[in-house]
Image 1 (cartoon, one colour):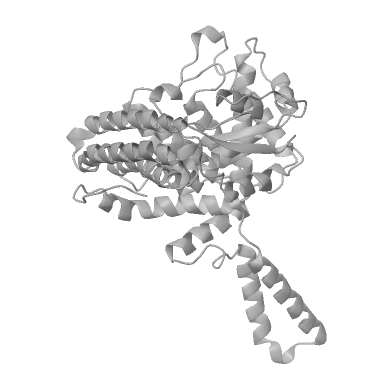
Image 2 (image 1 turned 90 degrees about the vertical axis):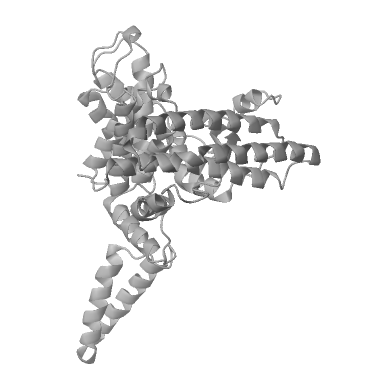
Length: 427
């Protein structure tokens, strides 16, 4: 059951759209520091265009209060997004961009050290609003840079230019990182599953496998990052292709995998419901199979195959998998954010709380402690300090940030979208 009314899901969709416009402005300001004088003139033109763009979209928040304008809101959102993607593509004209943020590299290095990953990836930006994996050679060639392949080809993770300042989106890179894992696990799961003659079945299984790996490592943060992107993509991209299953199917599989691991969070429920409502309004709420694939209904995502894929993911040698304890830690971090407490300063795990109680009991009995008791007290304090000093994981921080976002949203964001503010954009 959801506490949010439908209008708040509309606001969530609109907030995602307006955030993207705000991040384009951040990108422009960042580029202004590194481009040449000639390019700066073009950048000034783009800034003026974006400001005009933002003025045109100022009407959107006001539509939220009027149910009769619901269809107009969706039309305006779709038009806004089309202009956003066109505008975003124009940034390929610039020869320099801010360097990949060290936090992104640190996240990828933290995860890619597992034995399951075949090779460390490079990270680059793209003018397309998309996340994907590629070889370094192919990425350079697509950018018009002369490059030749080598026997030790580096794997490349690609993210949109405008997302370099948005940590909430970086979990999407973990799905792409999963593509560096050997295909043997998918081969085994596929061989044990239903017979599928068409090659699209294996490619779809591969994508579902990578989704599960991303969930295994990033927990709810990946589900929310992925769904956030879906909310602002053209509805045509939600449908199946030769390489990817339909978006609804991917969300279903990820949701059930999170549910099985007892990792569902309010943010997961809210973003899932927002996307389901959007697909219903746009008339694509039902999963459809490609007629040309000659697939048995349900074959690529049959329970048998999904169970096989899940077992293969669970058996992978991954460092730092997201567990129920991480979920609890993320919840604590989120509550601390609401209280204005810095993430690390306010980080306390369930183990810490248990140790605190144990310490209190020791203090009460301090007068009667034996030497063995004093030794135990010292050990407990040492363990407490060790746990308190340990930093939160990237997945915990990002999961907490998504929870913080949806917790604040109904009270703060909807007020900002009352239609009375001169500038209703969220940075």
